[in-house]
Image (cartoon, rainbow, N blue to C red; front, side):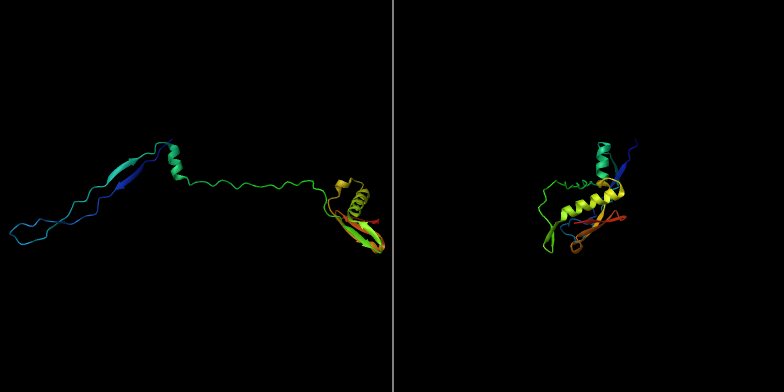
Length: 142
């Protein structure tokens, strides 16, 4: 592996004016003396290891956000839905179950093959109409 040489340049301190000392009898004269600039010194800086050099160059990475998953539990049903009309009562779950079974029978397949079902309940006719998977239509008596 090749290592890169890093060169740093040191600069001289700023130039200051220096006043000359005053002689006893002579008139006071202020003389200024300029300091010579210091030559730039090249200094080679080598990191102790390649790993340290990489750590200095690479920015800190953030940890990826953790994904949370929601587990579905088999909770018991807490709501019962009934349709009441003209003194009779129809159970919502029974209508759905019977509609899926009838649609599966019309397709000649299992109930699990019914992916979507639309049910139109008409209690005045004592019937429910269904459309399964957007293709199979039928009717069940309530």
